[in-house]
Length: 181
Image (cartoon, rainbow, N blue to C red; front, side, top):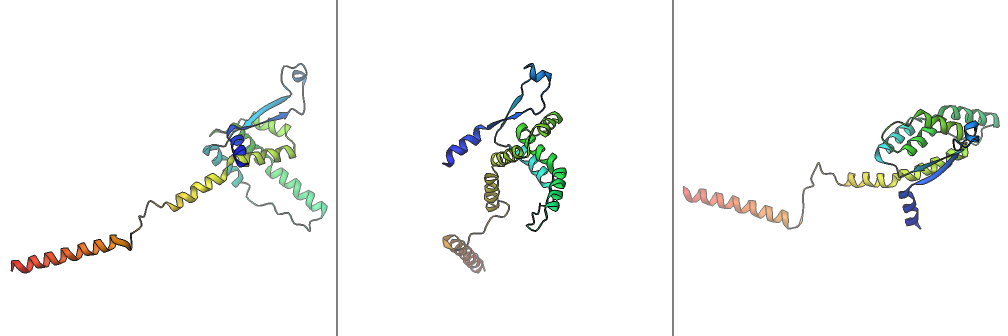
């Protein structure tokens, strides 16, 4: 079951964004009323940019069960104001998937035409395409391969052989020096 999912993620996932406010150019069919985008597996440069945006989110949203409705709405509005641009920017980075800033036009288009549920689905898709598990697995394997400090071999024949060699060289050199006198 995991293989087909991996194959889909490697090919990219396309989605459509419908223009919410059409104008005369849309009605005359000069401009399309839906735009197609594809999110391919995220490259390392894009992964770094997205991680920077997510790192700027700062505080974690704390949903307390004892909040009153008015407090919950206030908290929701505050978070919309603080984080909408960052969520849209993450989606824009994923669409562009290059080590450069997304255009202001793309960001404005997404802001004007995506609903909260659509942005949630797209962010879920972006997280899948980021494939952080493989990145973390690389980090773990690099951590285990510490090439800077080679390990000393202890036990086994190698230490016995080296001690025998050093003992024989000491006895030979002391015997030679004793014989020369």
